[in-house]
Length: 468
Image (cartoon, rainbow, N blue to C red):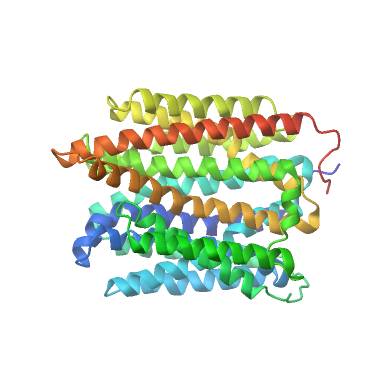
C-alpha cells in the first residue's frame, strides 16, 4: 500500500488544524477572564459563563449539521465561510462595548469552530491511507489538544499584562494566517447541495438547548430546570421519530448498528466529559480551597495536557501497527482508574502537586485512547457513512463540555446548600468537590466497563475494517 501523501494535502490539514486550534484556544483562554469580566460588565458569574456554555452549545449545534455541510459544499467553500465568520466575530469581540455584543461575537465564533473542526478529521479520513491514519489523527489531535493546555496560561498572562480584549486581538492574525494556508491548499471539489432535514435539526437543537438550560440551573432546581428538561426530552423524542421515519436524514442512524463504532463513540464522550469536568473542578478548588492565585490554578493543568498532546502522535503511530485493543486500551483504562481512585481517596488532602500528578495520570489515558477512538470508530464505517460518524463524534465531544460543567457545578454548588453546610465558602466548596470526585469515580468505572467491552469486540473481530 502506498503511504505517500502529497505536500498540498499535508498543508491543507495543517491549515484546518490551525484554525481549529485558534477556536479552542479562545474558548479555554476566556475561562480565566471571568472575574475581570463580571466587574467590567457589572454582571454575575452565572451570566458571564454563557460566553463558554453558549459557545460550546453553538459549536455542538453546528457540528450536528456537519454531515450535510460536507456533502453539500466543498472544503474550500466551508473553510472560507468559517474564516470569514471568525474574523468578523473576532472584531466584534475586540470592540464590544457591552456584554450582549460580546456574547453574540462568541456565538458566531461557535459557528466558525463548528464548521472547521469536523473538517480536520474528515480530510484525514478521506485523503490519508488507512495504514497511516492513526499518526495523522494523533498529530492533528496534538494540535487541537495543545489549545486547552495553553489556553488558561495564555489567557491569564494576557489579562495580567493588559486586558481581555487583547486575547481576541492576538488571535486575529494567527487565524488569518492559517485561513490563507487552508484556502490556498484546499482541493477543488464538485459538490451538489443536498436537501436539508430542517425539522430534525430544529428538534434536536431544542433537545440540546433544553438540556443545557436544565443542567445550568441544576444547582437551584425549579420550574425552569424541569420545564427545560421536559421540552428538551420532547425535542429528542420528536427528532428521533423524524430520523427514523423520513427519507432525508440529518444523521444516518444505521451507523449505530456497528457495535465497535457505537462503543468507541460512547467511550469518547465519557472520556471528554471527565476531562472537561476536571479542568473545571481543579483550578476552582485550587483558588477556593487552597487559596492559590489564578496563574497557579491555570498551570495545574499544563503538565498533563502537554504530556498528552506530545504523546498523541506516538500512540497514533502505535495504533497503525498494532490496533487499539490490547495495550492502548489496557494502559488507558488503568490510567483513568488510578487517577479517579487517587482523587477519590485523597480528596480531603489534595495539594497543588497531587492535582498536577493525578491530572497528568488521567491525561496519559487520554493520549492512549481518546483520538484513537475516533480513528477506529470511523474506520469501522463504510465510506458513505464516514461524514455522519465524524459529525456524531465531534458533536458529542463539544457537547460533553457543556454537560460536564453543568453537572459538576450543580454538585459543587447545590449539595452544600442541600446539606446545609455552614462555615466559610472554602469549606462549602470542599464539601461539594468531595462529592464531585465520588461522581467522577463512578463515571470512570463505567468508562472501564465500556473499554473492556470494546476490547473484546475488537479482539474478536473476524473481518478487517473498511479499507481505502
